[in-house]
Image (cartoon, rainbow, N blue to C red):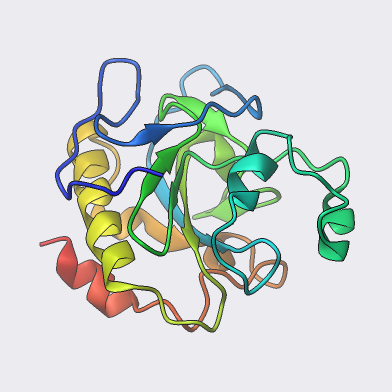
Length: 188
């Protein structure tokens, strides 16, 4: 996983320069006329509460060995992706072009608009709902966010939500361990 450089640009195909690229098959085109107008912050760890090991990357590329851990049996037949993952050490990996529709939000609604995958970018932070995120993750998340805000005119700092905000009752991430005030202050 490439450790970020805290300054990013997005190329003409929707890929961040300077990050590791691991292409996921779990994406499709956005619907006609859909534009990026929402950023969704998630958290993930596989197995839950354990960090490292490459399990997230393998999950997003449908290559996770389900026999490695009993929890992985709950993931059978799931096809999931996010645009980006920020690891505990600040390493940034991109799985899906920002111009395409990653499969990160599931059943969701933002400001009376359903199917958030259609118009959002999803960033996964390696973490849990309760563990504090690392300084490196906040640094890289802010840098990636600034690049996205610069690349997508309809995306604003006010249009950033947690997975729990767009799927209340179904999702709880990024959870109490995520410091929204710190993150928003870092965007300035």
